[in-house]
Image (tube, rainbow, N blue to C red; front, side, top):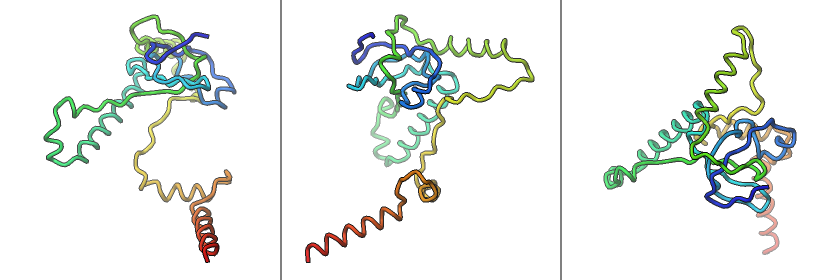
Length: 193
């Protein structure tokens, strides 16, 4: 196993996902071929990698850049006019990093200086054109790239409360938590008397 330190240039190996990957959530099929630099190494063998945006697939990169622009706009609109006016052009730039958590076993030292995303994306397009016929449909991959979630908590508050109450996941609902808190406060008051 290769040893890594923070700042090392790495590449995520490309392989098929296994049932074990679904349990530990440290490898997904779209991780394969991504390049970046080691950010943090944890004692359990997991590694946080700051991904080079150029190594992302075109769709993932476009989605990331769109989210970055939306966040920048939201941040600037939240500032007062005076504060916005004092910022330099450089300070107004907002760069969101794209980080993944994977296992140290999934990494290899990146020998090349350039990310492999453009070549990887071109190869996958070529293979889909040559292997697939016009009328054939492929099933979506189980481990497809992540989708961006809405960034508004208020819009989803009612949906979240309803799903918590209806889910049998053993998670207490908001009502259960309120009742438990009320019971706890009553027990403290009765002890003080």
